[in-house]
Length: 223
Image (cartoon, rainbow, N blue to C red; front, side, top):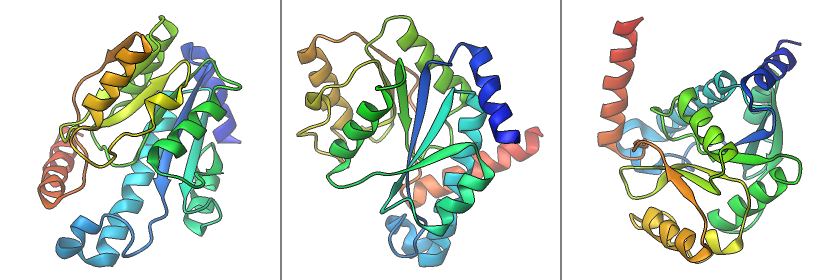
């Protein structure tokens, strides 16, 4: 199967001990990209969300990690996820209950039972590159306890870990512009060494959607 060959190829990059976790919501109209609904409508926002998931999984395959886990909400049984699992070499998992921090803690802890390190991303960042994911994994292999890719909105688009602690994810004001700063404070309190990668941006608001359009046009011209 072509997907299995991709995974075996991942071991040749030195990332055979690293897991890549992708968090995704099912592309249900009216439940995703709600801040873009006034611009795109519920169906249009859902189609955009589905496209971003697909783009993220293609990025994940290019990064050539040993394995890719797609952690799904509200559950892994949604037909969109089943379709993606046939198209890409991913294993499906349900995110489960709790706030974002509780779900991330659970996913990273699970991955680290069988991997030396884990990198976790969402599906909202179109400017993440395979090189960013590999850089995160290499930093962890080089001794960093954590890696972050800061986002312009005050959060982060990527977190990589060699170990986990509930303190890193509990009590964080998710969805605010202080997520990154609060996380830095927790890392200092834990005494962990961490590295930060380049600053990126997410697609959440109409201005971001316009920026995405310009990015896609630029990529088309560069082909």
